Length: 401
Ligand code: SF4
Ligand code: SF4
Image (cartoon, rainbow, N blue to C red; front, side, top):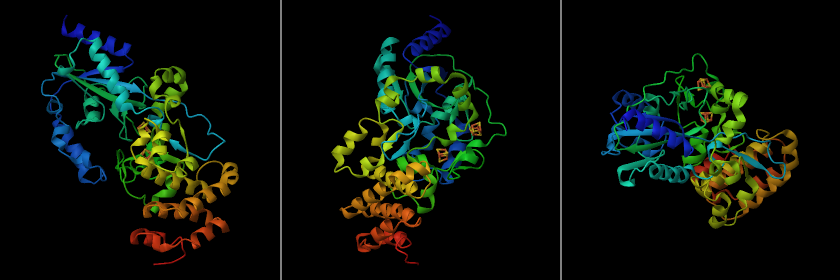
């Protein structure tokens, strides 16, 4: 079989296994991309994600991840799904589309193994990855025809295939002809930057993770800056705003929404995981970690752990109370119940950081003239807070400076 026939056969088998838009990349070092990546790091845009800062030179050199490999297959796995109207039987927070089903790492890895079997590639001679390897995936994908990097820093695929997809790689010891770069552009569009609620899209086309809701609600291990909390709106896990407003994604919604959703693997659909809406009051009332594990199952929501997700829930509950999430009718319907639930939450033994977030949430209701919320804050023993949280919370207690 010639190299060209082999490549066509791989694409055919990959497609039969549910992968899309399969491209072949070389394992050559991407020297030109190192400067871009390093500049992003130097500006501090990686926030405290230490794994992104380790060994940038390795990230731009695919061969260092799999020395035996001669080529890398770049495979896309779509995850788009229509966000239905919010449920009316609970207080909810939104979940980013990529996370509505089961955790993609395990699901994609299992399918890559099946792909190797179908291609009769011995597992020992292949290496599978999906965002779990020190590799500048987007640069590799961009250089080999899988799309261009939009100003929201996401890979936007050709032929109006948009950005709602995971990228996976399979390093193989086969000599295949690499695909060439796809040239696409955002042109003068900056809708994502204008729509981003935290102004995280900076320098007209790169994302400062310190400000990005995806980082703040998933990878961030600390409290969320009070100045940013209102801007989270109803996002409890991740954020899709810069994808929702992107014309390349709205084209899919207009032209091909049904078939785009049919391409999503069953394991990644909302029915398989937590779905688009998280039950916030259920979450903050959970008695222990075990019940948390049952609630989030094998979904990506495991990542911030119970502590991080509860922190996010308290922020979104504050935004419900402050009129920045849900409709005014829903807010008013659930207002009292939210205040009482947070009141119960702060009575119990909690970590200082979470208590401070809960007090902030109550303060949002207090600012709207809710006496019960103000009483709960006033009755709270400030000595339960660590000094930093106490300083932060002083404004909720009406103590200046
Ligand atoms: S994910 Fe949300 S917060 Fe982050 S850049 Fe996009 S719109 Fe902004
Ligand atoms: S919204 Fe506009 S600027 Fe942003 S990624 Fe999409 S096309 Fe590019």
